[in-house]
Structures are given as C-alpha cells and as structure tokens.
Length: 269
Image (cartoon, rainbow, N blue to C red; front, side, top):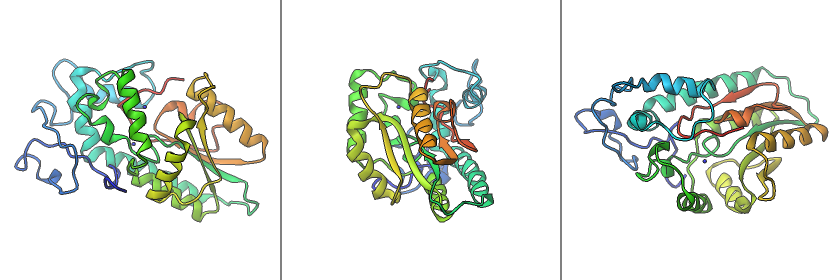
C-alpha cells in the first residue's frame, strides 16, 4: 500500500509538469509518467475551498487518522508534491538527521545492534504504481483488481530504490549496525523482495521479515510482535524508519524512530 526505473524521488523523480516553459527544472530525460498539472494546484500551496498543504500536515503529524483516500480536490496537489522537488527534499531532511544520529552512536562489537527498515515507500518506492491514472496518488480506491495489479508490480522485483534510505542503510552498515527489513507485504513475495532489495544496493541483512497470510492482525500489531521477538533474542534496536505511523508505533520501536513523508495512503494501526 517512498534501479531499472531510475532512483525514486529522493533521487528518483517522477515528472509532474505542465510544460517546459512553465517548469523547465522538471524536464529531464529520466522522468517517467509525466502528468499535466492543473493551474490552481501548480503553486503547491492550496486549491479553492480546501487547503491541501494543511491537509498533508495533519496526515504527516498523525493528527488525521483512519482516512482511506486522498481528497479528490487535493489529487493534483499530492501529485505535484510527490513528483516535484519537495518530496525529495523532505526525504533527504529525514535521512540527514538519521545519519547524524547513527554517527553519534557507540556500537558494541557483539553484532547485536540492528536497524529496522520498512520496505514499501521506505527502502523502495511505489511511485511508478501510484502515479498510474487509475490510482492517481491515492485518490482512487484500490479495489480487488488494483490490489492484484499492485501485487504483480511487487513481483516484478523492479520496484525502484528510494535513494535517501539507501544512504541511511549504507551508514548503518558502516557503523556496525545490521539491517532488518520488516514489511507488512505478504510472505508470498519474499523471493521477489529479496531479489529487488539486492538489485538496488541493499546487499546484506540480518533478517527479511514479511507478514504471513495467516496473520490477521494489523500491521502495527504484527510489527510490534516481531520487534518484541527480536528484543527477546538479544538484539538492540538502535533505530527504526518507515513511511507510515504503523511502522514506528507500538512496542519496542527502537531507541529512535524516523518517519518519511507519504500522503498517498494511510497504514492503519
């Protein structure tokens, strides 16, 4: 439900532009899925009646909860944000703080320090799928057919990297912290996920943990259970990064948590 297609916004940029004259900075041969912006949304501030920047703020601060779709009136605003420069800047800002934190740590040499990485729109970017007109950055409802198509998208093992997160991963490995990839994705996609992660630069990890289809709990509950198990096994969770609040709340979340922006969908917990 954040490489073959180029590095995703946080160095992969999926183009959103009206014309070369209006947005020359967005004209790049690597752009995919270019979209035409509505004039009232191109400022990135608001559209009539509904202040979409404020809506995104309530989402990212977890003040607005239990929503299912991006308001239709904010569709072009979210498209502009996700495919323009600001999303990349925001990802870089989060990761810069996280890397500074990593460098401040004194890591024991016992190999028990780990960092929890979410996958969808954290380690990898689902923007190529969410930029499709029939999804439109979270405005359209993911029905059963679209859910199946999203699963097929994952199984290609060609989901692009979110480059800022890859830099954080490299910093943690250099510091002696082992990566644990923890996702709510179905365990049926384990082989594709492993292949995809390695292909874009995540070379090694302590564990790759996917949600079994038999587990009916929420993502937040599932991830808490996994983290509890890791702590019982003697691991120290030095940090935890995800794009949804469900990734970084619950029990044993780690010494520090970091949230990447994502106004396209809500990971309920």
